[in-house]
Image 1: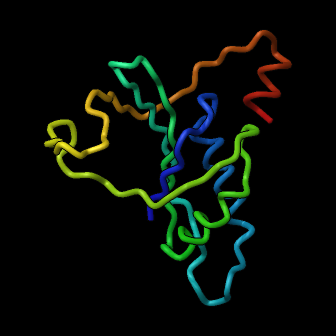
Image 2 (image 1 turned 90 degrees about the vertical axis):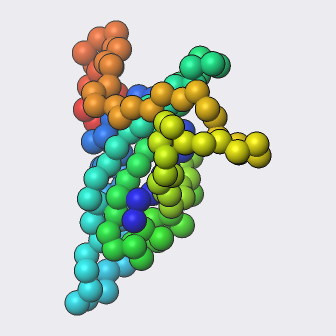
Amino acid sequence: MKIFIPRVPSTISKNDLRKFSAKLLEQKMHIPFTAQPGILSCEILQIKDVQLGITEHHGLVSIQPSSAGQWFIQHLRSQRLHNKLMLGREYFARTGGVKAQFSEGDRRRKHLQIEKVGQINVQAKGMEQFVQTYLS
């Protein structure tokens, strides 16, 4: 199951999201002789609205089995990441991509640029701030 986590902090990395998700999944009670929940992948999506000049960051986490994904969504609401309250929902891929046809009542924004974030831009004033922000 893929889980969409909207509006994550822009300073978060894929590793931060993976560690955060793994720590939350460790709290799930494991029943013997059943599949251990696992994180398959973590991505950070950067979405730019060209017309408005707004940039948003969203997390995308794949968890198996689906029951663990449902548990993760329910328990994500009380968690904080970089001092921001998190929430999530099941991710549904839309067909059509960039060339999708928009109907009159469609709420989707039409002028978006979506890309996966690989590395974060490090902006630290000193080594101590860098260590506190990115390595701890």
